Length: 185
Length: 134
Image (cartoon, rainbow over all chains, first blue to last red; front, side):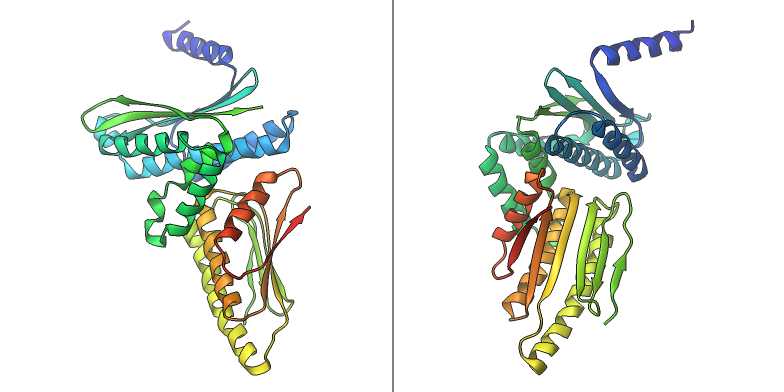
């Protein structure tokens, strides 16, 4: 057995142990996203999870994947690191929870902004999140749209749980940003 | 004025805005690759249609109601902003005395879709929104 095969087996075993339903590492184009989401829909429809939870899970995943794409487009990570380091998406289920984890590089100057944003939504209850969502929807001009931030509010609303996150410094220019949303059944 | 007809895809909704048939409907899933490219023509169409309605109102007085049906299965947060724009445009027409209404459809198992519609409606001044459970 080659080292690569043995590593593949280890990775598979690890993912199996962690109840990973779906995992993807690579460039998340819109086409790839669409294909993952189609797969997810089929997967979900064969479970006994209620429709509203299925839709919330779907919505969270769309927002997470959209976020990755935005960062990916904005940052030429291969140029920054001198090697390819594509983003990661992982969906797993444990006990009565689904876990959605994404990981991607972000410029260090965005880290504080992102932390503030996540902490802000984590501090709000459902009513607070709805108000914040509405305010954000109302005030944004078309020009400000791309760095909107509605996505993270939407994730928090649909998740119903606090978001977990980590920024791992990689170089003086970028960090690896991991965010986890959890949805309870 | 020509009808605006857009076929649905896996990631963008079907649009039928047909003044001759008096049918105005958006339905399906919305997470287009380029949200602005998808929604701006719809918004432009509505702005043009506004002048038709204004002309009709001046010439004939009260016009028959135009009912815009929103039948989304799902929309992402980027689409939400553009849906807000469509509703704002319709709201503007309603404020100017045009007879426009919205029907917001939602699956009865999907309380979130109803709540989204309610959140939108809080930002509107005059446009009547009727919620329809399916």
